[in-house]
Image 1 (cartoon, rainbow, N blue to C red):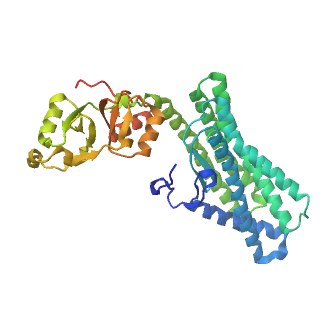
Image 2: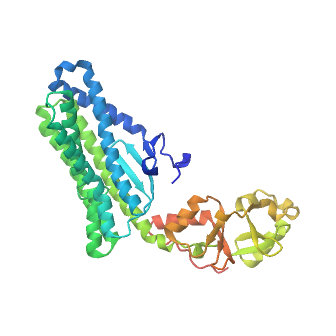
Length: 393
């Protein structure tokens, strides 16, 4: 996918393109990196009091190395997705870890399971590598402290992501298992989403309770911070679970998103036809699209609805239809049998207000308006069928 300006996360910094996938660091990463540096710097002082202020440089190195581990976790998902033929739009490193934006769903429950398991598995492997490295150094040293912290953090990332609730990797694994047992991916999504919401409530209640119990040995500020982080984390899990269900319902309805059923009936006119006459023919035919054709009757341009509205009524008899038309480029021809994600992918690759819908033999079926696709997409998001009601026209 392109990382055009409109596709870049707000304020995100492009850090590279491993395997051709853009990796962005969002502004929230700098906030959590500073927080990790401050908290871990204080903990280092308890183990290595002789470091002084240099402990914060060590803590900053840990924050960067930790997010490097998170990036490797996400790259594991990305590599598996690419091997399965699933496009990955981008990877984001943000406040609570990272996310790989995979644009399509795995075709089978088994592929979904391994796609989800790849990240936690690699985090466990990294934790094991740091554990082995820890055996070669003294614990009460800078390398020892860093290796111990990276080992522990990778094991925590792996175990946390294995919790069986969406949007966590463990939730996707649970979804895959339920999908395999029931044969219905939507059932798997609903089950895993409800488990995810249960986890969110557990985090919301459990973290403040744990912080209060540990309050005797922690400062009030630390207890309050644990409670706030628990609430933020619970909100992220809750919203992610709900979003997973909405996206699943959308994908469930996407096969109903068909170019053939969304195409508007169209009228073909010559390039020099006065706009007023072309609109008269359009109304007489009960159509909603205008296509400019050459002398042989081949479509050469599409009339832009937005451009027509800019021409006052009194000028339309003296304005050629071609003046408000866009040349028909190859990307503006849509096969009538295109459906679902394939249709959306083609529209995203060739953004335009109107497209010509053609039959397999190349003949014109009608005009597809981007606004109609957007409305159908919104209907799909609401769980209703995006297929429009039959027209009496």
